[in-house]
Structures are given as structure tokens and as C-alpha cells.
Image (cartoon, rainbow, N blue to C red; front, side, top):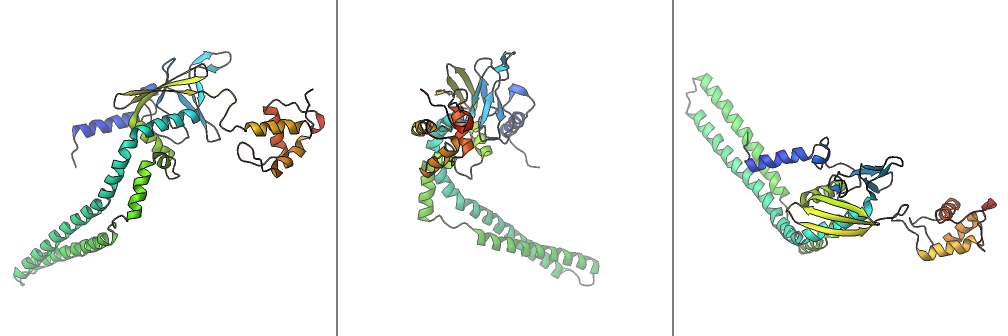
Length: 324
């Protein structure tokens, strides 16, 4: 059994405790699936409760404080979308860790070959030891009296075992030599250093999972205090090192989301609504190459929904009401 230091043991116990999901506001809880990057880190600045997350069928989610400030309407103390706050905190974290990225990239280049060489070196030492033990077993077998069959048989068995170990280690060394990482080419080195200088590209890379991003955020952040007031979110980021950073951002208004039709398209829709019914507006927009806020082509249903969302009354027969 391998012994570990007290510091490592204490760190393991802290990690186990923080991964518990049944301790309420005491700990952040284990990293789980879901789009909310700041789950377990957010705490309400008004009532002090840890914010929960509500996931939708879409990509986004909402952070919610569990405190009821109006039981009759079930209005919550604090509710806001995750999109802006996740992006803002991610940018701040990347800004903080960016100076370490180049150093990490250069260290990776150095460690890449060193790790493979170390494994090969350990296997070669084990092979040398096995060959010595095989040679020693053979000398013992050669020195025994052939008439002493019991001892000779045992020594022969030991010799064969040593030879088997030698053959296994020779195969292992041969395999490791074939798997030794080649030195990085000049282009590979340049690309790796360029990626280290572009942290947002690494953060948003398809291979970077949500779970990995959450673990990075928890590694550098201890807690985030968020207060919503007057249509804005005020954040205080408490870092693991003891420092803190203040951020402020605009909070989405009720019914507002990240998919917003541009002003020119909205004005065109209003003009077309004075002339054409809904089912005729859709092909006009499609022929002009205009797409919806989500990048989709227009249909009669989407035109109708757009009119409803922007409070353009529709008269029977699909015709829209023309303002006087």
C-alpha cells in the first residue's frame, strides 16, 4: 500500500466533501451535465441562498433563487438566464489564466517526450533485472547434482519462470520503443503556441466538454455573489487565492433572449404586413434571402408568430391590421 502525504489526504477529503450533492448550501456539489457553467458557484446577494439551475429543452438555462418574495404569484427573489453571465465569467477567468497558458504549452512540449522516455527507462531497468535473475537461476540449475531430481526440478521451474518474465519484458520494451512520441515538428510547435495565445478558441473548441469547463471554473473560483437590481446583475467573483473581482452586466428583460431579429428585418415585416397576408409574406422574405433570428427560412407559422411577438394584430383571413 502506497502512503500519501497529509496534505494530499486533506485535499482528497475536501474534494469528496465538495462533491456531495445532499449538503445544501454548504458545498458546490459534484459537476453534472447541463449547460449552466456556474452551477454550485452562484449565491444570491439578497438572501444568501445558493442559486439553483432550471434547464430547458433548448441550450440555455436559468439560475433561480429558491426564496419566495411573493407567495401569491410565486415570484422568486432572483431569476436570470445563464447565457450572459456564463459568457462574462468565462471571459474574466480566461483573462486571469491567459498568462499561464504559454508556459503550460511549452511545458507540454517538454513533458511529451520525457514521459515516454521515463516509461521506457523503467521497463529497460526491469528487463536488466529479469535477465540477471534468469542467468542466476541457470547457474543454480547447472550447479545442482543431477541425481537430486527434486531440487533439480524446482530449480528448472524457477529458471523457466525467469525466462518467461524476460520474454514478456522484451516484448514490452520493444512495444514502448515503437510508441515513443516523435519530436514535435516546427508547424506543430507553432500551432500549439498559437493555441495557447488564443484561450477563447480552446475554451469554445468542440472537444472541450461542458464538464471540463465547469471543473476549470471551480478550480479558480470559490464563489460568485450575484445581486439583481434595476435590470442589471452585479457580480463579485471570489477567487480561490482570496482575491475578488467585481463585474456588472445588463440583465435580459422578461421575454428577451439572445435570438433577436435585426431592426431592418423587423421594419420590413411591418411594411409587408400592411400589404400582404401572412402566407404571402413568407415567400417574399425567402426570395430576398432574409432569415429569421435563428437562421431559418420563413414559413406562414413563423410570420404569424413574429406578428404576435411584436404585437401586430391579425384580422380574419390572414390579413394584418393596417394602422391608420
